[in-house]
Image (cartoon, rainbow, N blue to C red):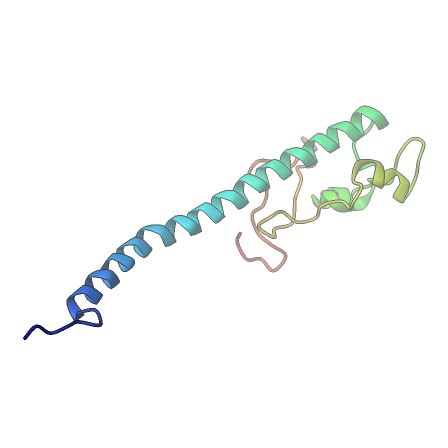
Length: 135
């Protein structure tokens, strides 16, 4: 008499679990690498945009957005005098260059720091957030 099987054997289940484990071991590390890589690319694109806006400010206003503010010497570009325009002033001037707001942190949640000598945000930035943690 032949017996009918209504389920999977233990061997079939072990093979399926092993295959899923192998695929997970290959795919999961790639997902985390992709996320980090994407954040790094977004950070670089944002850095270039900020540097372009700094240059645009200089081209239109005839000076860099640090004016004579004391904050500009600290290396914090976001507290620099973005409001010190030749014609407009205050929020009207800032909104001309940053319609939403002046970006203060990058995609890795690190504060943007600019080089007061070159008046640019360097490629490496400072790579640490406000609490001193590395990014």
